[in-house]
Figure 1 (cartoon, rainbow, N blue to C red):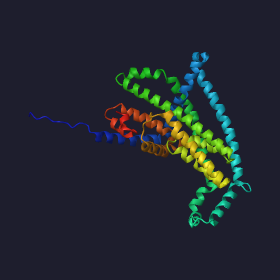
Figure 2: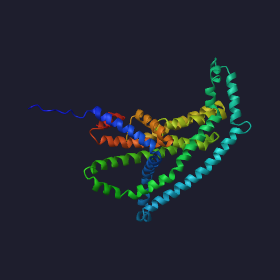
Figure 3: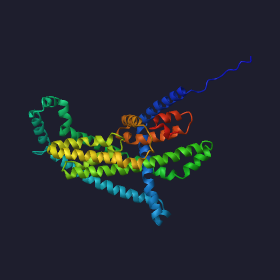
Figure 4: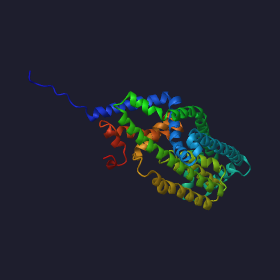
Length: 359
């Protein structure tokens, strides 16, 4: 009668199991609600991207301070003008690239000449191994490279077609910016402080990520485009635009974006010029990735590189290129939210780059 029943505490394994279930359900939700959730996530990124210039315009111009919505009109006008100009140049650039592919003595003919010359070269038997592999020939074939660029830009065009839905979400995010916190506080007063901390930390982290990533991606793409233009590489603007988009994919994106133009350089240029261009492209990528980008980011992300790679791969499998771009900000918010609960803090520690950052 005097015996008491001791109920075991909730273990970390139970918390991990619950987290795994949530991840599985989240994956299914992201898959089946892609037409709604993907534009919404993109709208959130745009919201954080335009906050800094909006605050600058409000502080700088009195008329905009009296009517803050003018700031968004100015940014939309500038963005539309830049997008229109780039689209015109890109269309002409791709057209020139296609002409260079098919004309007499163009990239296709140069590729065949160099491929045949490689088979006749004396590389101690290595030339036979290379030229006998159809897979290698297909990888460096300029037609395959053109198809790759076309598919990437087609995915980007699909991304742009969702901009109407994104714009609708963005408008409502702006309109709800001031009223939503008060409504949430009235509805859930006991959770307001914790959620407010999560939102504040997420806002700071995402704003830092989006703004610095935009600066770094633009700078790297501009220099890459200038290098390719200087060496007269066909389709230089298309490769620069692809590099800009790829730089939003952490760790591997920017480096992978240099491979197709390097293959074109090996076909279009003599070996010395191609090697020089390759060195300059690698230096450009490393300058931004190793020197400039860390100064923008610092240690604010604090996410393990392995977690970043897995996030990119999973989000890309669900939402394509758009998913690879928005996956990292989603992971940043998830990690910050996990930190605010004692039961899920161990999971946040496992996602972190360094343990002492969380202590």
